[in-house]
Length: 280
Image 1 (cartoon, helix red, strand yellow):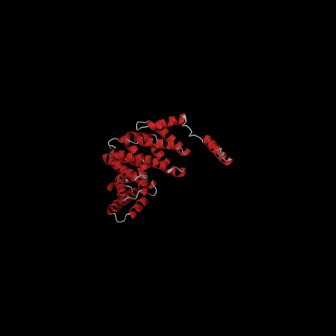
Image 2: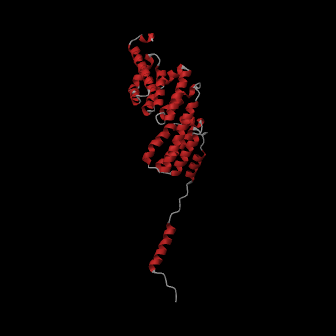
């Protein structure tokens, strides 16, 4: 008895399967331009130039805007390698990479990236914070040329990471203790704004106490020099008082804050009464 022929419906189903298999798209090959970009990112090290750092962030930004995980992961890995030592960090600073990294982190929630990409971006930012803190701890106060870099890291990262904030305070204090002229330079470089940001974004008692101590050291100069700067940094006095109210039982913080406020009060009196400062 001859075998039964397959039903028409079965034949149609088999034909549809073959058609679907033939028409399913194969993974699109990576273009030459994209491969060249990825090779560049994969080869980036701490010895890169400023232009190379800028290109890394351009490609990272492109990946973020396009949702391209290849660009994003390679770009984040490149930033981690760049920040493996102090030389790479300084190049990052000169290329304005620190503030660009922060903008990437802040844009990430609006980009709807996957958890793995979010983890890669956070790891890159953590590498920047880690190297910044390490460099600030080891920077030599004798090297005056590095003072602008200290201020740059303190301004951009001191409000983002507690370790960087503490290291920034320590570095600025070392420079100030080494030469009083460094303290004057810091004051003219808007260090009060930097310290205001750090105190305003960090409530850890140890950090706030260190900030109060540094403020006292920097402001212990004639009132005519520092009073206009304090007045210009609107809200600094209020922030100091609010920080003290956050830790009423921490005697070290309270004493540092009261000493600072007493100094400012005396400076204002000296500034308002010409000649009074000469008797201090």
